[in-house]
Amino acid sequence: QPPILDFISELLPNLPAAGITHIGLEIATDQQESIDRFIETGQGLNAIEIDPIIDCPDYRRNLVIIRTLAVKVVALDLPKSMWNSKHSRDRWMTNNINSILD
Image (cartoon, rainbow, N blue to C red; front, side):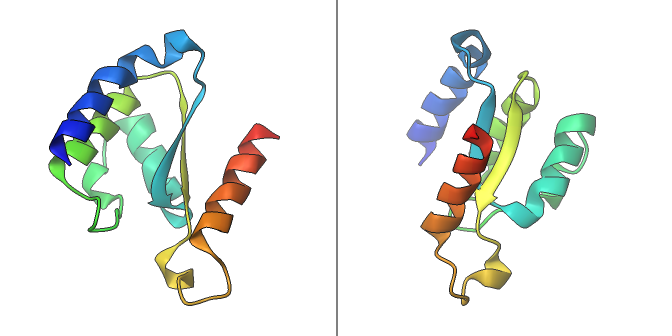
């Protein structure tokens, strides 16, 4: 929703000063390479595959803001190719977050 994404866009620049070192995104882990490329070069924003349920210009605008921050950006979600597998999206994301915290 635009108001929520606007609120997040206002908060993002304050995260590094608050000690935040990582930002986890509900984007499939198989998109990490595309995210890293965008963060490093500023190129390829549209190449990042985001689920249509959350993909919108305001979400991508927040990725542009995140790119300017000194934080590690991590894709957390289960790849779409695995949605019909035994893996749970929630468990997948939980395991990824635990790996970061470890």
